[in-house]
Image (cartoon, rainbow, N blue to C red):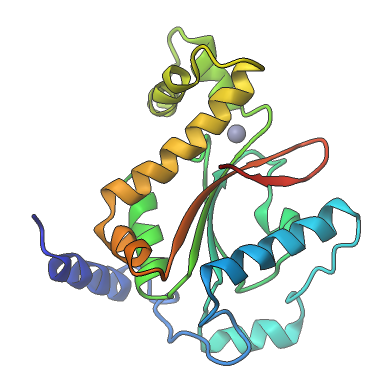
Length: 225
Ligand SMILES: [Zn+2]
């Protein structure tokens, strides 16, 4: 087994070489450092309720916050979601600058770069929560369900979603929606399985990794069981 020390050294090195801006010291005080996974989730859900109700506060978007954040960042949650233009985490969770560590690609897929980014946020920024958010009418899920040959690099996206099609097989209800839900849960399992840093933090009770689904019609985020 590759030692945790080797992984930590690699992340440290990567943060020096590739992430000079992200490697700034963690912001102290009012920011997220020290929040429990449960309080972080509550903060996300409260923001989503405001968004759904049309009472969004658009917090942390002014000059003062911008200047505060030049000292460092302490995002209280990592959100992995789809690149779909209708799915914008800072908007549907009603958060602002420095609040969320957002990772996006078509189909909210977990790969090596996503894992490295999550580990950076957990290990160095002490983010207490990771949420994988799938969504209604996801084109990547649709392409996987349609089957057949996907041109260019799109095939690599489709392949990653195939296990979810299998997992959702035979379930009652809408096939695309069942696949989206299964896929978000499989990505959560993948993160915990493939990342020793994440698994350790979960084991220690410092971190929760959850799957969720975003509804395009209502704007509501549902945490999946
Ligand atoms: Zn999508």
